[in-house]
Length: 351
Image (tube, rainbow, N blue to C red; front, top):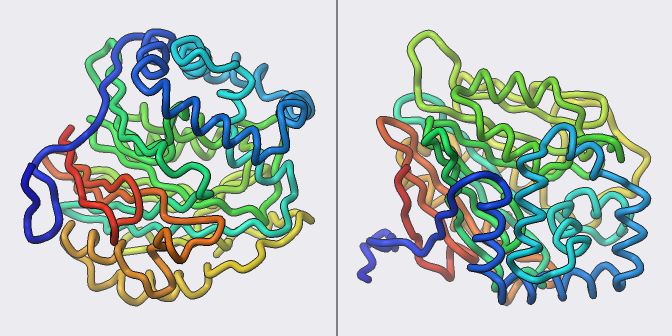
């Protein structure tokens, strides 16, 4: 497997699962059983034990919402638990990552995801996904194929239905946690919002869904699609329990870090401690305007200034879990790393 001068591998490690939700989840669980076991064991320890996991699920009670609003995805989560042999509450908690962050009110929480979108033709969308270090080793790129012939590819942690990604219809979604925004224990959790948005056949359809759904967690969603004549192909939405607020001029390049730029639906939760969000936003606002190719986007995501990319040795409790650099034109080209992009080679998948 050779690597080009840009660090791009000619072929990519990824997994494809087909069928309905339960079937996809069952294959996911069986294929990635060891990684799921390792990451969920670390998760339970990080959360404070099984009793704390049960308390979190009981006090938030998201399952009724999922059964109504995302039954196929809930079946996928159940299938992952069955296929991996991991207790369903632990797999479910893994899929409620953003929700546990605000529920636990951890004062030292640090967030560092950075997103950049470049509307036009070709359209570009990418991000670094920064997560707790206990999740290292669980990185995966998963392609889910649906009965109607469409597919969705997501960067994720084994056992989790998705973190960010794109679909074969030419729609991509990237995200940033906005923990200072108001949350709701009766809203739709982030991972499920992401996956349902990625069933859309256009940016406008994804935006309509995200605007109308009830949100469990504060989150920024960057939506981008291949350029369609006469239709906007980009959106930037800051979402909270109070709804969705546009947060950028999406007629040109825009970036987003981990602090709200537009919404005023701020909660009384503990503020993020040690955040580099302002510094990274400045880099995205300045360097982002220089990006017009996927190679340049890939380069920006390896930037240690800010830091956009957090290496393992410099990470403390958080690091860059992985990165996506996507191009949307006649096809959807997804470049991705399973770890910090300064340390891992870039892989490639075409939808």
